[in-house]
Amino acid sequence: EIVLTQSPGTLSLSPGERATLSCRASQSVDSGRLVWYQQKPGQPPRVLIYGASIRATGIPERFSGSGSGTDFTLTINRLEPEDFAVYYCHQFTGSPWTFGQGSKVEVK
Amino acid sequence: EVQLVQSGQEVKKPGESLRISCKGSGYSFTTYYISWLRQLPGKGLEWMGRVAPRDSSTEYSPSFQGHVTISIDKSFNTVYLQWKTLKASDTAMYYCATGDRAWTLWGQGTLVTVSS
Image (cartoon, rainbow over all chains, first blue to last red; front, side, top):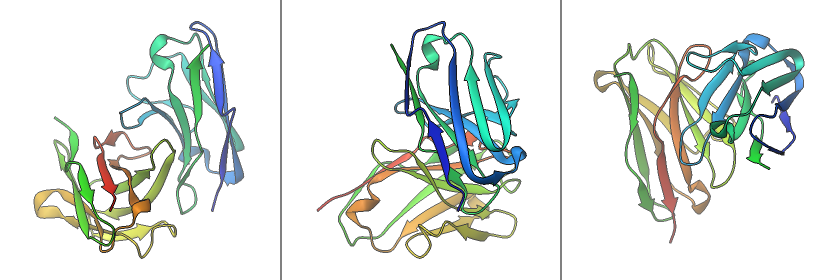
């Protein structure tokens, strides 16, 4: 099983600041099969980035993804109030498909 | 409208059986795998398994194999998640989801509470 470790667990930032979230895999992940989701309380997750770096339809340009192999990053430039949420990385290279434990971006 | 609509909240006792559903509409139901995911209270996401609508084949995470059954009724564009014997530890929110290179379409979630 591929274990995804996200850091930091919680990031305290102010609107307008940049958030950098890390996702490290226990073994190499196909970049085409690395996804980032955002989840807000009481809602299902929403896809932000797929293929490690491709923004999903309707996702603002301030969200960007990068990385390959075992290290992936989600960057949120100029945080907006609606960006404070929990973010999960997810891989479907190897079965079982797995998620990171989540990174919470909270208001400082 | 393209959507997955899940069945409503359930409250059950340990040892009881349960089947929850996820109905797709507004898109070609047989195009993509449909997965079930679990989210324990206050915790992260776990992939439970998936069904391929074309041939009804299933694949499970080892963590859930043998404890749940995923099935499909293509005539109703509906996927099911079933337990024969619920445990208190099954208390969680359950989501169905589908998509091509990512899960772009999610159900609204079904909250299952198992308590004596």
